[in-house]
Image (cartoon, rainbow, N blue to C red; front, side, top):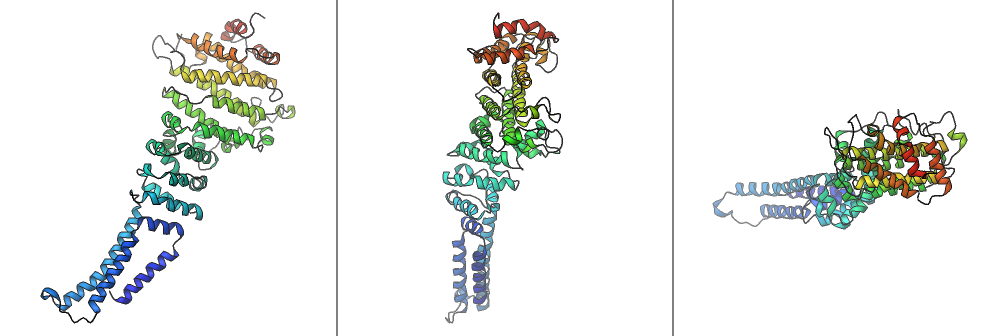
Length: 485
C-alpha cells in the first residue's frame, strides 16, 4: 500500500461516517471498535514510513531488501483492511456485551428522534436473551409508545416477544408501564395479534390472518395465566376500554343501528373497536385460566366495570331499537356489547363448573373456587346494574339479560345438561353452585328500590314455563327473589 492509497482509505472512511444517518452512527459507535480502526491506520502509516523513509538501514537478520519491502507493503495494507472487516463483523453481529448495555440507550434515543426503528429491531432480535440486564432508562425509551407503535405498524412483534419472556418481564424496573404501552398499541394497531385472536374466536373479520407465530405468542402471553397475572395485563385492557368509552366519540354511532358492528361476514366495525377487543382479550385470559385450572385473582370484576360503563352510555331510542333494520337481540353496538358481556359471563361460569366436575360414572362438582365466586359476584352486579337502569335499554332487552341469570340458576338445580356440553347424567354438588349464584343475586338486591324489584319481576314473568326445568324451579326461584309475596 502507498501513502496515497492509505489517505484514500482514510478519506473514504471519514466520508462514510459523515453520510450515515444518526441512528446508524450511534450503532457503529456502539458495536464497531472504531478506536481500533484509527489505531490500524496509524500503524499502517508507520509501516509505510519505515518502508519509504531514506534511513539507509540494512534489513535485520540478513533478510533481503525485497522481502522486507514486500512484507511492509502487505502489512500496511492488510492491517487496516483486516481491522475494518472485524469492525463490520462486530456491527453485523450486534452483540450487547456487559460494556455495551449501558450505552444502547443512545441508539434508542437517536431512533426516537429520527423516527427510524429498523436498527432498534435488529439489535433487539439479536440480543433477546441478553436484555434482562438492560438499564432502566434504556427500557423506558425502548417501550415508549412512539417506538412500540412504529414497530407494530411495520408488523414487528418484537416488543411483545420480549415481554413474553418472564425473566425479562420481571427484570424491568417498571414492568406495568411497559405492558401498558404495548397493550394499548396492540388494541389500536391493524397488525395486532390480539385482534387476530379475538376475530378467530368470535368472528367479525373474514378472512382473518392468525398465523402460528401469532397464536404461539398470544398463548404465551395474554392466554398464559402465569404471564397474565405477573404482567398485570388486565389493567391496561380495562383502562383503555373505559377511556375509549369516556372519550365521547362513540355515542352517536354506537347508539344507532348496529348491523355492521355485529356482522359475521366481511370486516365488521367491532374488529377495530377497542372496547370489544379489550373485553374479549380479558375473557379469553379468564377462559385460559379456567381451562388450566389456575385459581387466582384474574380481576373478573373488570367485566362489571365495562358493562356498567357501556350501560351508562347506551340510550334507548324507540325509532332505533324498533327499526326493522336492527337486530332484535342487540339493536345497537352498545346493546351488542352488553349482550356479549352477559353471554361471556354465562359461558365462563359454565366452563368453571365443567372444569370443577369429575368425569366419572358418578360425576361430582367440587366446591366453587376463587374465579367461580368472582364470576357470580360480577354477573349478579351486571344484573343489578341493568335492573336499576332507566331509559338506557328497552324493557325487553333488560328482561332477556336478567333471564339468562335466572335460567343458569334454574338449570343448576333442575337440569344441569343446560349448562354442560353433552349429557353426563346427574351431578352431585350442584346445590353449592346454585346457592352461590342465588346468594350473590340476593345480596345485590337486598334493600332494593321498587323499580329494581319490578325489573326482576318482569324478567321472572317472561320466563318460558314450557321448559321443564323452569316449571320445576319457578316456585323456588320466586320465593328466593320475592319471598311469599
